[in-house]
Length: 446
Image 1 (spheres, rainbow, N blue to C red):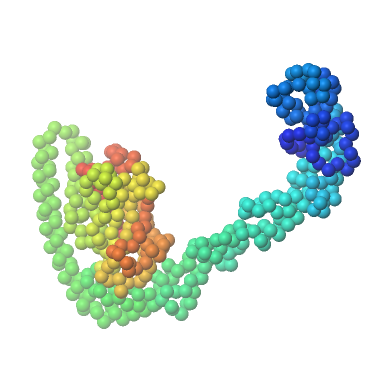
Image 2: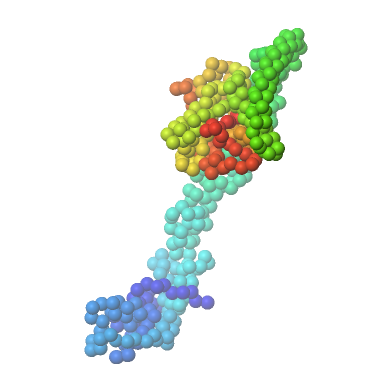
C-alpha cells in the first residue's frame, strides 16, 4: 500500500529513471506536477501549490495565456496517477542505495525500518544524533551516550550516563565494606542495616543508658560489661526510679489542680452534656501538650511548640526550635519551620527541615548520621489523627548528614511541602492542628 506523499510546495524534485513526459510537467515550476490541476482557459497542467501562489499574488491571471483574470482550475486525477507511476531513484543513491521504483512508493522505501539502509533517522534513545539506518543498531547498543546497560551487581537496565555515579548511590546490590571493618568484608547495600544490627564490632550504647550508664562498647563486649557493672546498673535504676516517682507525683498534682479549675468553670456554662465532655477531653489534651513542651528534657522524643504562627507566616520568617539531642550524649539537632513555605511549597505549604548542629559529643559519634526520624504535627484536640512524615538520613547528602565543622548548623534536610495550608487551617470534629495561634511538633527516632 502506498504511503502519503510529502506536502512540499511545487512539483516532485526527484531523480527520475527516465525523463518525465512534458504532458505531466508543471508550466510554472517545470517539475513533474504534484497534485496536478488543469486550467480551464488554456488546458495546461499546474501544481496545486503553484496555483495557490498565483491566486495569492496581485495579478491573479493564468500564467500561460494571461488573458483571464481569476482563472479556474480542476484537479486532474489521471495526470496524478501517471506522475506517481514514474520510476525514480532513491534519494540516497549517491550514498550507495540501488533501489528504484514508482514515485508513489518512495516514502514507503525511505520510512520503513526494513527499507533504505542509507536513510538518516533519529537515534531511538533520543540522544539527538541522526544515524544512517544501517548503523542504528550498532549506535544504540554500543556508541550512544544514552544507551541502556546492565548494572554489574543488580542487573538493572540503567542509562549509561548514570551507571557510574548516580546508580551506584542507590544500587541495592552494590557491595559495601562494613564500616567496622569486621571479618565479613563486604555486604550488599540492602543487607547493611541488618548486618550492623548484629555486627560484633558495631559500637553500641549500654542497655542501661536511660538510667545513666554512659559506656559505649563493641557489641561483642556487651555481655562482659553487663556482668562487670551489674551492681552499678542496679543502683542507677533505683535512683532513676525514685526521681521519676517524685517528678510524676508533682506533675499529677499540678495537672489535677488545672483540671479541677476547668471543671468548675465548665459547670457554670450552659453547654449540652455531649459538648461539655468533648471540650473537657480537648482541653486536657492541650494542657498535656503545653506541659510536656515546657518541661521537655530535650532528648528524643521531644515536643516543640511554635507560637505566634500568624506573625511568622506574614513575615515569611524562618523559625528554629531550641536544640535537642537524638539520645543522651548524642547528635545535636534543631527543627526549622517556614510558616510561609519554602521552595516548591512557597505560598501553598508549611515547610519543615531538620538540621544537624555542632555538638559537644561529636568526637565520640559515628559519621555520617544514618538515623530515620518521624516529624509529627500534633492534633490539639485529641491524641489521634496526627499528621506524620518520616525523614531518613540514609538518603541525605553528605553536607546534610556529615559532621558540622563550619558554622553552627549543617544544611537542612526535610520537606518543602510538609502539609498544605488548606489542611493546616482545616478545623473539623476529629483534628485541629493550629489552635491559639500555635502548633506543636513531636520528633522521634524510628
